[in-house]
Image 1 (spheres, one colour):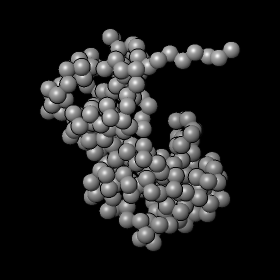
Image 2: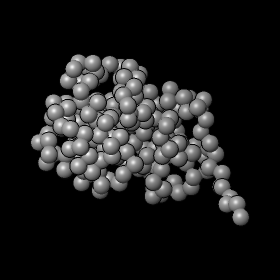
Image 3: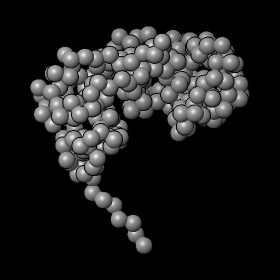
Image 4: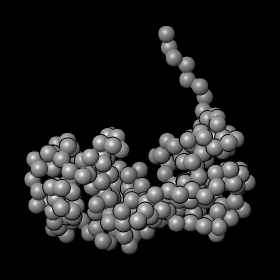
Length: 219
């Protein structure tokens, strides 16, 4: 059964009360049905490492092969596999090393994956992004789409920046401006993210222009 990020009128009415321009965007977009990933955090970390710099179709193929070889993606099955077996699924030597090393840390208890689920957002992002192969943006996406955290707004997400430029007519969103919006949207930054992503696609009526300065090609 497909699982979507859960939110309702409480969250959207709060955001609309805080920001008139975002309110207009929310009304233009309507409800966003954003599919969630699995609720198993270990498998989510592995899935994100596998998916880096490859297409969605390639990721689906690799994941199917991993499930065929491992049966299920758990710390035990991954740590028991050799790096060669993981590479045979269609991933690089580097990714295989990241994944196997991560699994071994979880099995040994060096990394407590269950504890991450009970950390606040800042602590969880720090813990996950300390893993080889996982950066801050990936950690934030894991919190949003695996754990369903309510207040994730990623400064490192280019589409979020584009959505903000389009909603607020900014040429550039600085860190200071971004933090102003983050504070304004809190505690429902994740819902704001859904709408900024939707606007960034440039297919919402009334939102078809990115206000970033045009770049000119050198001859």
